[in-house]
Length: 428
Image (cartoon, rainbow, N blue to C red):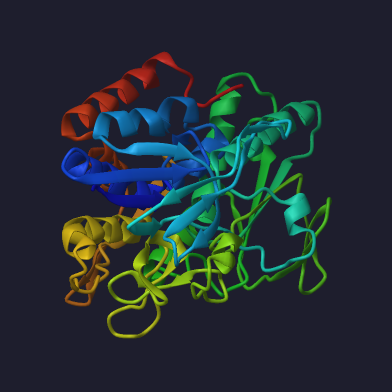
């Protein structure tokens, strides 16, 4: 009988794992099933470009069903709803349409090996008004919502001499990249006839509770990015905790109101709350599943977790693996490499995170970052055109994992053609 491998979550790690397992074992004694609540995949680090219209998600997204057919695994649409560990059964919630009408009933899938790769969502830390007044960038739908709100805001203020004010809470990679991309969009909208599109009529406030932006990266990279943002006109507000969000803007801990027409919350992550109801699996305060060095959950060796939803310890015991796309990619590769041993009940070597550095794109204006993050404990800082090329190559590597080299070359060629044929930003 074929071994049943079920992967919940079609993000970077989950989809890459399903694709590689399907190609290698899908017709050779293994049944691989990928479950996701969406029909299509979009690389999460690109959501800030969807939000500003720099990227058309309708062109760049990947169909799970087509990917499954081409790579010999099965796709099932659904959202994780529960788990029965004793019977090795995972439960999926009913699928409904936009009006709440049921399309598919609740279902269950049996597994021999379960991989949870359900990613993360934005953590608003219970801040009053954040959920009501801020846009989160956790999904394509949320990014599209912000883009529509942005275009409407430009239209609404077209006859208003006052600038359009946008506030972003959280100066991690998402907040920093979004703030720069907004100025690129402003310039492009001006060229397409938006009277209020000029960057001089845009005020972007980047608000960070900590003492500096990009706190997870080396200070010299943070400083370089800070300087570039200020050159663009971003109002960087470090050491500025937000205690409340209102319809008028952000209220800081010192009772200062940072006025804004549009607000984005990008300050921290947590795993989806469903992880707290998975038949006794251990989680931390951020809902992340506790796993050991082999990526097995602490309570069940037949259940693995990878990516943002996994709290995986670093080899030195100091902290845990950071929630980055490169972490999810490495974890997926580790499980793919040892899947036969896992299914045969044999021990596997521990997963060891390798920091290859970090890059932050400031739209077309600049890119800064470091390479070879743990090569002898040293890193090489890069910026400008070289950093931009390396940044783009990270996404191409993800596409190679999904499509293969030949198709990725063709997709890249199509992207270049679309830059000539289509508007530089999505205008509708």
